[in-house]
Image 1: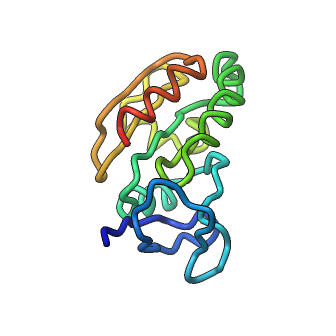
Image 2: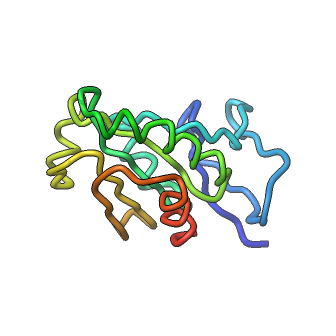
Length: 143
């Protein structure tokens, strides 16, 4: 059976789980917390590096800032979209004010910017707030 590597949001450990169309239960082998959590993860440099290096799932990262109006408008949409992809895609957020090195590394010029990574490589990028259907389509395109 094919396996997929998933990084636990709670403890950061890497789990290898069977690849399925859907999951009713999946827990971390180390901390026993659910791997089905879909709330967008908040990433710092260390969590960012661990997630990108160890996840087989596509990762959608929202680069945002607290003072940005469109970012605030898109935050609930991003959260809602994330609930549609348990163990299919990872949704995460990077605060560009707190993680300026990551913003510079990826050339973030306007926010919000969503970058999609797969196999530790940037595969797509969209700047500006997206409506729910477009955000879901972006995620689905890379699964």
